[in-house]
Amino acid sequence: MRYVIIGNSYAGLSCADAIRRFDKTGEITIISDESYKAYARPLISYYLEGKTTDETIWYKDDDYYEKNNYKTLFGKRVVSVNTSDKKVVLDDNESIEYDKLFIGPGGVPFVPPIEGFNAESPMMGTFTKFDDAKKMERGAKLAKHKEAIVIGGGLIGLKASEGLRALDMHVTIAELLPRVLGLALDEISGGITAKKLNENGIDTATNDTVTKINVDEAGNPTSVTMKSGRELVADIVIVAIGVRPNVGFLEGSGITIDRGIVVDKTMMTNIKDVYAGGDAIVSYDILNKKPNIIAIVPLACEQGRVAGTNMAGVYREYYGGMGLNSVEIYGLPIITIGLTNPNNPSQTVFIHQEDESVYRKLVYDGQVLVGAILLGDVAGAGILSAIIRQGEKCLKYKDEFLKGNIYSFVIDNEFEVYNINEGYAIRGDFEDLPQFSRSNWR
Amino acid sequence: MEKNMKSIKLTNLEDDLKKNQIEIMLYPSKCDGCEGQEYKSCVQACETHMKEKYGKYNTARINIKSKGNKFFPILCHNCEEAPCVDACMPGARYRDNENGWTLTNYKKCVGCWMCVMVCPFGAIERVGKDHYASKCDGCIDEETPKCVEACKKGALKKIGIKNYSYERRLMIANKLYGPHLKINYNRYKNNSR
Ligand SMILES: Cc1cc2nc3c(=O)[nH]c(=O)nc-3n(C[C@H](O)[C@H](O)[C@H](O)COP(=O)(O)OP(=O)(O)OC[C@H]3O[C@@H](n4cnc5c(N)ncnc54)[C@H](O)[C@@H]3O)c2cc1C
Ligand code: SF4
Ligand code: SF4
Ligand code: SF4
Image 1: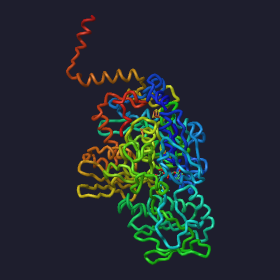
Image 2: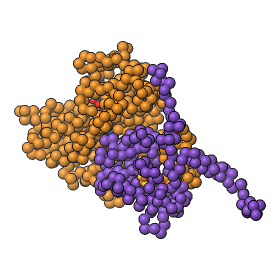
Image 3: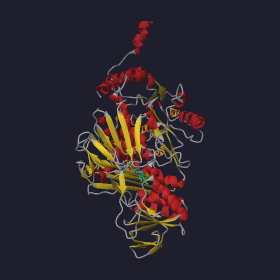
Image 4: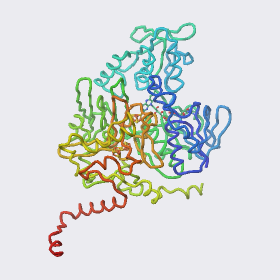
């Protein structure tokens, strides 16, 4: 059996591992257009901050590929997929045949037309790859005024700003929405976050954006003109508006694409033996109850695993995912889970705030918890994630949750629902005892 | 392909028993949060041991949470396909295939709290000051987990899989028939006399 995997990152590797679990001898080839072994993509900003280094940014152990007997083709770009002849074509015209294919090419940064933007400039770019971080590291050294502009106040924009700030740049985030992390946070939590950023040398220009980048003869930025009319000095400009599924190279392959790659419950595309997962796909969103693009690490891993298991011939379905994320901004932890801004009248919001240090918000749809923001104190956040994911009725716990006693739900349920007050075992592998398994919680 | 498929078996029971015996059993109703003591025994034992084992990553991995008069020990449940492993961006959490445990390489942990966000048992603690997330490793290289050793109330026990199933059966029988099964122990005593 020849398995070919496009993408050497969370989705791709999780798929490879799942295949290996069931198929010890099949040939697995992993292709990536980056010449590195797998690295932790979201950590490129931590790299600039020195919180992770050239030694610790690698996602897997050094002997990982060897140990699992994976063939690797790094630094090669897939230019097209020929699903009728079952082969993928690389940029050096080589073609690789497959019996089963997994496509996990992630996202590409979205760059709207902005006058003056030129990704070739050493002082401008996007921020999704290790090379981008290294480029900024060099760029910051050349910066004359130590001024940087980040366009986009979403997660990647925030991370890029933190990274640049650590390189001793003064950063301004330009965000069209009224607050940073506009989709996940609300007014209060967005305000607290912005304040934290401002205190640490990152300015936030909300309700505003860059309309023009003014460049010198060499094509490097000197300043930006904002929608509000202001002109800001800029040595470095980063565009971090968001990412889109990286599906350009699939044109003509016959694979159905609707924004992202469309997959079924087994993570198979409309073409037999071709599977997909990660940032490049639209998958079922259990909260919005429709297919959606949710570009986060945990889902990429889950989807890759479901795909890989099916590819190895063991049937398995994907339950669906939901959006959730966690960041820490200068010592302030922020976790957002599910629907954090109510989008229909049946939903109610409950809020608890202690100054600017702790903020909790719960969004209920009737009896069911559908979203939460935890800021400052994140203990037990995973319990809320599980509750939201399971669609548990828990309105009566709202006061406990707001006070931060998230564990009270577990205590009651462990005692009552599972009736385990006479003891239950938690350690070990439960595959043979499925009825006792606490691990198949999803 | 054919050959591969035949060798596929989700689990080999014998191997699993040898490798992955269920070893920690919770009896939450016996836990009284070590009332009256300055430190909770299990917490203290764990902390001491972690200090030896992980150096600066030394916080206790077990936590006693309470509600009213109920106490509940919170520690890692060692999920199969653990959510914390999926969520960990740098790959600091991983599954050790040799011993079947989800373990942590603390040097890689960057404190992103993705794992805290997904652990369904709330078993991971954010150590904000030192920027890492601590999690029980099951004391895999110890004969008996330290917290079990320390608990004098019988709320934590080490147990093998056979005993587990036996206790489980007892428990269920007790629960289903318990109230109706009135055993007059005195009668036995009288008889034996
Ligand atoms: C700065 C930043 C911060 C982030 N922070 C978070 C966070 O806090 N939490 C979170 O959950 N997520 C975060 N994310 C998102 C996270 O990185 C993605 O969800 C995750 O990387 C998706 O994994 P993936 O396997 O789908 O794709 P990717 O990680 O994007 O990997 C794609 C792979 O495919 C390869 N590839 C692509 N095209 C081709 C081609 N044509 N030929 C060959 N190979 C190809 C690439 O080389 C790469 O190996 C962040 C992302 C960034 C950039
Ligand atoms: S830390 Fe939580 S998610 Fe991870 S294995 Fe333990 S119980 Fe499961
Ligand atoms: S806090 Fe540490 S262990 Fe947890 S997900 Fe982040 S890096 Fe991994
Ligand atoms: S098993 Fe070991 S690491 Fe886990 S809580 Fe007990 S003493 Fe701590």
